[in-house]
Amino acid sequence: MERAFRDRMEGGQRLAAALQPYASDPSVVVLGLPRGGVPVAYEVASALHAPLDVFVVRKLGVPGHSELAMGAIARGGVRVINPDVVASLNIPQFTMDAVAEREMHELERRERTYRGDLPPANLSRRTVILVDDGLATGSTMRAAVAAVRQYDPARIVVAVPVAAKETCERLRREVDDVVSVVMPQDFHAVSLWYREFTQTSDGEVRRLLVAANAAGARGD
Image (tube, rainbow, N blue to C red; front, top):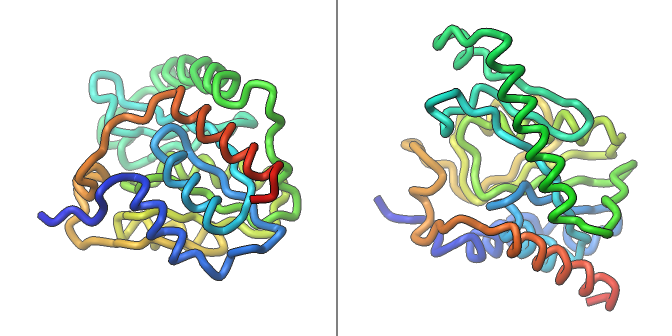
């Protein structure tokens, strides 16, 4: 299988090229889903001359199979459940609640770690571009979309370097625009489409946010 991108930086640069209609629009704000979506979002925000922020969403992994998402949670008490996974594995409500409570603590920790004293971006009446490094089931992104909608944006755009085609089709019914550089027929997993897919650290997320904030203050 040929890898589509060298790393998240290249993925972000190619995604930014596909998002050029949004360049230099003062209503645009770019939100990266940490951790892996933030390096991609940094490239997008830089190319579009738009502010960058993080939007923390936590996947609800199936106990014993943490990579399999039974849902996701986001700021504002939003919880999105993947009914197919829950039904096929007969996952009880108390199990979902326990996982959600644990992940909420981690969500709050990451919010403090990433942003520090930086205030969250104002999303009201803005064009919000939600960026991740890829979309598999879309549970995490759907939670982000549901949470962002509470802040009264003018438009919500989902943007990724690579995504499963059926996931994009589902999301198109929930948002104003979906942009994916690559939509392979045989998707399998996000990591397969990058030659380098190392884990993004909390420190890297924080560094990119500070750098983007400094560039915005300078008017770069």
